[in-house]
Image 1 (cartoon, one colour):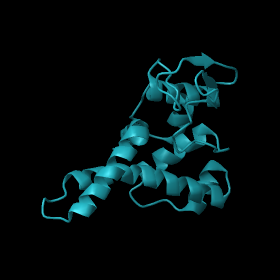
Image 2 (cartoon, one colour):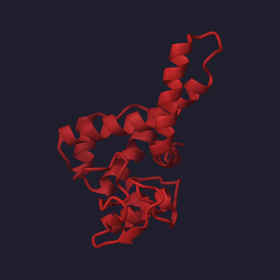
Image 3 (tube, rainbow, N blue to C red):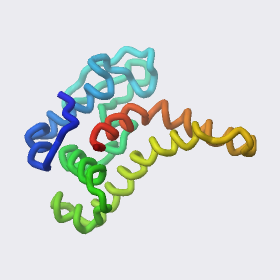
Image 4 (cartoon, rainbow, N blue to C red):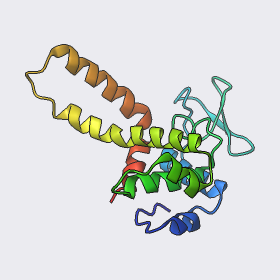
Length: 168
């Protein structure tokens, strides 16, 4: 189901023809068949309607979009996937106006998507820089970077890995 060799937008649309296919793909990447509550990892999870799940311990509802850049976004996942591919493949950075016209969304929404996707893509390079920090740097800076690295890895690493698959 994971195809990293997309050559065009039409291939992405064929791979992810609707919102359900995108959600299924996201669930596979995030949980790999074993749904885990983001609120309590040890809690039992109930399957609900409309691709939602319920944490037994907290009583809160969630889906595969929780703790991702897609959370609380009204933009369709298919458009997010296309935007991720465009941003990671283009050698020259894409403008929000171009992305908005390509995805048929507003320039403001396109700018929001670019900002969030680039933040996630740069996340991997930040982690690489943090691991290559020399020993003679200040202790406070190293402690701050390590704190950032652990928070980032816990919630965002699976998505960062998925975004890396779109890079060539």
